[in-house]
Length: 139
Image 1 (spheres, one colour):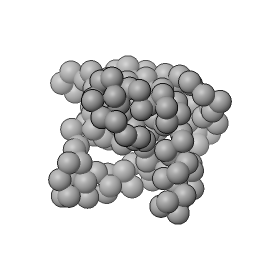
Image 2 (cartoon, rainbow, N blue to C red; image 1 turned 180 degrees about the vertical axis):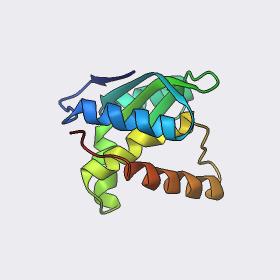
Image 3 (tube, rainbow, N blue to C red; image 1 turned 90 degrees about the vertical axis):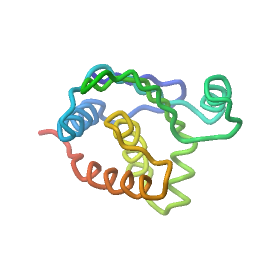
């Protein structure tokens, strides 16, 4: 089950489409979707989480807390809409595409993908692109 929480004036256009997509991505990685909570917030909100829980004093686009057990994918994913907007501009992509990338980035971490080394980061980007292509509006 996927839930969405908003700590700022922002809302996904169609939560049902995102939930359907996220579940299909999890299934495509041979995992089972447990409880995943998305918390959309601003830079200041996420900076406080970064400081409090990770001892990092800088802005970031996503922080995820992984509660997965075995193949059951669960966790809390905090996303800064401020960072997503800025990254979209910096990378010359649409806000919607950058938001999808960040949304699925957390799920891919839960599925076991890492991004610390350059090889891992390259694999993560490839998986993000692959999974973004799976997004489509349900009919």
